[in-house]
Image 1 (cartoon, each protein chain N blue to C red):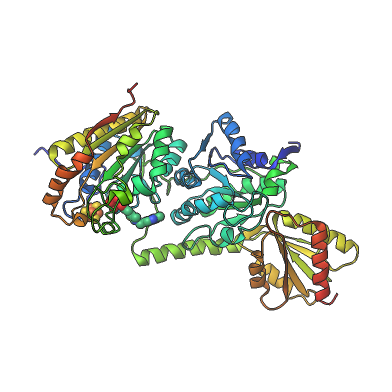
Image 2: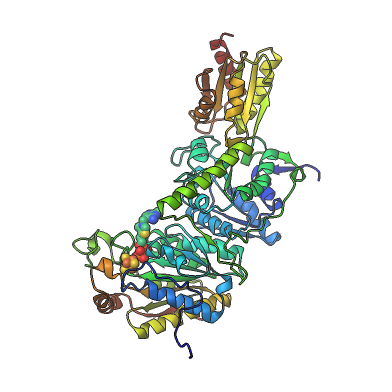
Length: 247
Length: 358
Ligand SMILES: Cc1ncc(C[n+]2csc(CCOP(=O)(O)OP(=O)(O)O)c2C)c(N)n1
Ligand code: SF4
């Protein structure tokens, strides 16, 4: 019998704690597949965020450092600068990366740190129970924006990929989405390219992944993917915003 | 090697390099930016890494990342910057990684001032971060001692897998003195493969460097493990110096760092005039020399203590804890970045002596 589909070698054989329909699991798998395909499991160090994915190291079978909230790009900088032979990536939610860690991500990108950032944009704070994130869409209801995000009160959602793409320092900045198999395949390509740029010592890379949080969106998994497609894709266009080859 | 006349900040930077530190992350703040400036020149010369971070928050989390790979790494800052670093410090203690931190204390609170101070004593000894957190805290009184403390801080941090802080006030960092780097033996970094994030290389199970323990019993066990390390520090690492504490000493001044230099000169002078005074100088602020001070307090000849600090009174709480109600503990301090003059100290000590009955 030929095995055509199995768990990536870089993942432990264990169920995750994620809610049904949560795309964190999908994103983990894509990263693990890429690590397997590039044969870098033995020299990869991940940096976990503070958020639902803080326990990512329970699923990924590589060395891991658990950073403080939003500072993963700084800790990854410390790891990569002290051990340039390692492959270093962070995995961060939108509260972690775009709110409390906004300075750390901007400056890591601007220094051109040779790290890879996997950025899960689910437009909400998952772990703490569905509060508003800097990425929450206008009008979107959360536990701290019960009447919907009011842009006059709190401003518009931050488009991190676009923001980082304005930096002069070379980088690979992509936005993909996890709402259907086609886009998941595209997301994997982007993640792989991001790791390749790191292996080549070329550039900082960030792959933003539009993701679902059915639990805190108050939806079924199917409704959540539909909502992502119908609402997030418009505000957060997919694409490659910048490559190291630009200019 | 012959002694070398150096500026404090440069001697501290050079000591780190001599100790085998090749990684420094920091953010400028007076009065210690010269440490960063020196290392920005020196690190590339020795194949090391100097990186100016976007903030102390980032610098300390870079420190954490580098430390998590078992790399010898240092940062330095001054009071307001140390407050920002407290987050990473707590994670580092929780995750059990070694690193060295220099705090050139300046006056506070808030932006305070830029002149020398000792007003971060509480923070350094009791509150380097949230949770049950302790750093070994070394308080040098001279440049030579700063060099020695920096050089021994790395192996100490590695021994306990816990950060070590050197609290040098702004004066120590800014002054010039002659130093000898060869006094301290350098050590090789220990093998870190059993815990550090260095890539499994296919040779071992993966390593996790983390501070999260969601299971309360697991966290309790972790806290107790850290406590056992603190107990070991308290058992093995207490350092202090006694100056002219003799059979007839009535008043024991307690002072550390720059203040202790002034107090030492006054104590020597008063002794010369026949006054029964002595100086107790804590070298480690944590662990504190409770036991030794308590022993001294039990002597019949000793009538009282006096904590002399550049703060409104912080170490005095530890002195009192040591002495308890056996003997009175007086206080003299200057604040705002003002170093007490020998005259100030002399007057205060003579007054205290008089209170104790001459
Ligand atoms: C310094 C600090 N502030 C706040 C928190 C509480 N907290 C934990 S996770 C989180 C937000 C997580 O949201 P996000 O990054 O979007 O990740 P998700 O859970 O949605 O995957 C917050 C605010 C914390 N742990 N530390
Ligand atoms: S709360 Fe949201 S982000 Fe967190 S696991 Fe559940 S669905 Fe996923």
